[in-house]
Image 1 (spheres, one colour):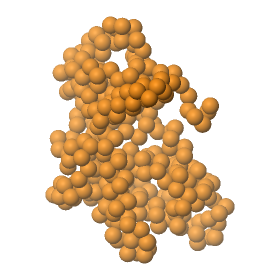
Image 2: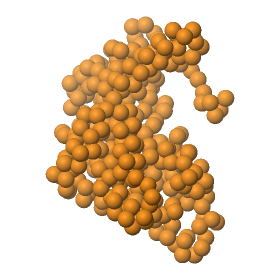
Image 3: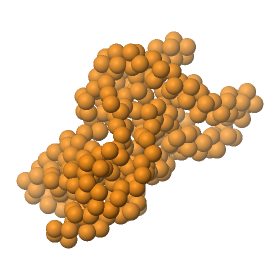
Length: 302
């Protein structure tokens, strides 16, 4: 079951088709305009953040067939080795013996494939009805093992998005991210004006374009996969459900509103021990979210 499902998924996700240009170090005291020149976003996207529209994406990418073709070539070269291993395991009747090893390889491959595939992998990590237990367990590592993007890019995004010079707003900020997830990474800083510690979450450059293309590819291949496997599942509907939730997460402005609303609701109910980090609105935007720093630990570690 894993092989056909993975072949279908792997035919939709890989690293960025339009990679960010190499970004030099941001000079100390550089202006926000200089940082903006260091951050190269795709000129066009099929739809705005938090407005998933598969019809618009279909028209957008069908008018750009070379983007889909490049993606398909990347998919083949990136996933063919793993898929061949699955086929060989089945042919040699050793699927159960190799399951743990393949689950580790699957996790590594999904990480290489990019943010959208990572997000789907995280969703599948709890779906033992769709994946064997060993594969689902392997995908749980995606919660912690997402490699960061360039710290120089991250700093450039902060300055360009907020229109600030880091050294003027922060007395210090971590050189490298302290945490990295599928669509962004977090830096720890200290505000020069108040001395307060804050967490600054920065979105990966061009993630909207990359995810949009991934979802378009997945939707396009869903009917062929369904016919070939006679899968009794609305695959397009499943992709759209994933897509709507994922695209919604790309608007950090909505996340800021939800965070503030949650804290307010808990306070009104007298649950002051249940809260969320306070948002710093003046240092937040669609692609950057700054909150007061709160020490804590994962529930799994408690």
